[in-house]
Length: 317
Ligand SMILES: [Zn+2]
Image 1 (spheres, rainbow, N blue to C red):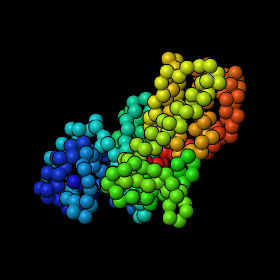
Image 2 (cartoon, rainbow, N blue to C red; image 1 turned 135 degrees about the horizontal axis):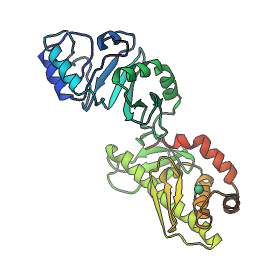
Image 3 (cartoon, protein in one colour; image 1 turned 180 degrees about the vertical axis):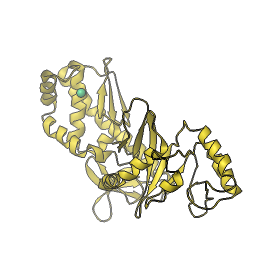
Image 4 (cartoon, rainbow, N blue to C red; image 1 turned 90 degrees about the vertical axis):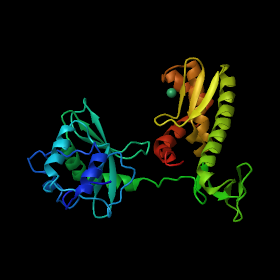
């Protein structure tokens, strides 16, 4: 289910290519064919919608085989669409990059979103696949450095560390099928999270337990602060928000990121105070910040903490 240049081909290649309809080559800007362009040290694997890739057993395709001209006609016919991602290989790494067309973009742009969904290459209006690949190859070292800087993703499997309320707890499978998750001390005296259920279900169970804990802590802190200023909260929801830690609607509903349960309690308390303060001051004026600091004196340090560590909290679950 992979097509790559330049190697031998056969009928199998044509069949597999037709299954991957949005796989589209485009002559590179200098008129060089893709097969020439891809002879460089880093080569590009392209596919779209294929569930998996097995490079060793993949059929290969060439522009010079007996199906060549037919394939090129098919490929040109679909020139408008781009594959949903490309994969750039170097000697040490293979990096999958999603492609996104944006008619308003002025140039090619490579970025690494904070939500850990992986690198994205923006293709401007009039852009094409060959140029996108070239741009990605030119910037691949920059991208790999950024990716390596990131802490490893923690999926909440047995043995993983969860920073529950800012303190690392090791996930221990109890081996029992039933029961509730509980936090306590492991045999070695270190904090542990005891999780029943089948191993496969542990990540999901831990995530939903953490969301419950976040809801409890946030509700408790928000209610304390609301009482202090004599305001009423009409509802609290806990979600996996990507770009904000909390929000406050004009009808009195507060919304928070469940990931705040992975931060020290002072940080969660600051975000609760911040949103409650918006019940009184629907802005970020000096008056708002005075009120916020009145409710949560740790406001300045908590804001710095979130700036420095917030991204890390997106690496869990
Ligand atoms: Zn705010």
